[in-house]
Length: 575
Image (tube, rainbow, N blue to C red):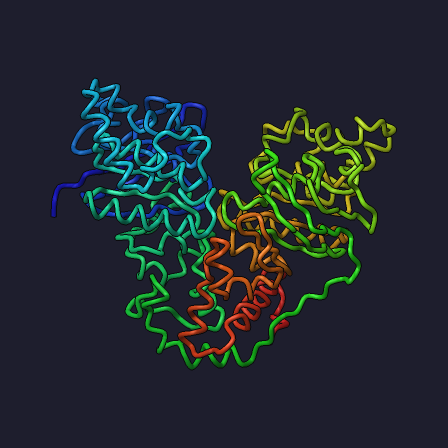
């Protein structure tokens, strides 16, 4: 085999501002042409490991290190960050933060301009790379006008144009709808094979990355590499459970039924997995379970009737959208990037006014109500908690909405303390917000809405970029306030796991139109709906087909009932 392209020997790194090392005794070799997935819970050291490879450590994030790190046989300290950029290209999660040019062509050409490449050669190379990533028709467009998937392709082209040997992808799926995410994984696979590039992917969505083969999976926890294995081998262990990483859904279903997974059955892909060794035990489990049917109130708290909207008066963003939200239910709004989901939420909250149709709250038309007046009934929680927080202290932030409405200070304090107890933040009430983790900040933003005693809460991508432990923490908290307070929850999400596991209904929007309003299990076992809305059919469907189960949504319903009971710490009520 060739010499290692990336090599760490007994490598330990500690940021200067921290007391303990972030990376501990790392030993790793990555060879030319390999595709490697790096997984692990938040804070385990994944990003720091990648920063050591692309030069952000130590040139941007300084600290102390022992052991050795070599990139293409070179000491990164000697190459410098510019020298490393000729070997390593990084595509960041936040593609907007990576754009420099005013047009797509200018952005792709940036590295070539720095190298003083002749104009004709530069244009030819930009066109060639743009064609490779299927973005050649958008060279004159502004990067900020593109969809999430198109932006990512521009970022890929921007590093490909410099003929780098190593590609680093930092959570490439975090902001993409399921079908676009699937296309992104396919494109990464194509680039790796065509260029024989070395690819490292950091991603929480294990099952989605495994849509295409990877050579190895590096599992990290507490700053250490705890597993470096082929996917089939790792999926046959309990190591992912121990690290708080979610197994692919079809593996989880087999494990729930009591099956022990064997690497010889090739579990990396459900399409090619041999399920025969598991059939008898799995079917016994399936036949003994019943689908859990959640009870939902018939009382309607919000009605959207024939809503249409256009930003410019000509191109319709939404057309004839109609659905009801029932008291105490958790529902989701799903669809591809740009389908109009967030626009619809904005109309419900009053940020924009619909062109046609009506919105009824408790049977009353709310067209004339201001954003503030609607905010007393409908709370909107943004994806990024840092964009909502404006006060330095937790108790001030949670009480802000009441304070600006002129509520008596004693009443504000009472309601804030009561809400903080519900949210598990009471002991931290006098803490600065800056001392909190991302998940805790998310709780603060939910508390700041909950204290207003709304009837409806809209959550925009509540779990984007979260590992499974934090995802579960946030969603179990949301479920608890839904059950305790009877608040209706609307979730806008790209996460099909979340939709399947936590919501009772899914309103599916494609190209500004509602194409169905059904149970998540039925939505995710329908090829027609999935194709139109850029969703991804659940792997439980494929497992059901391989096991000969006639109605795949039955398996999905049983699986979710079983998962909920496990999280509630009780013997399954589904059996």
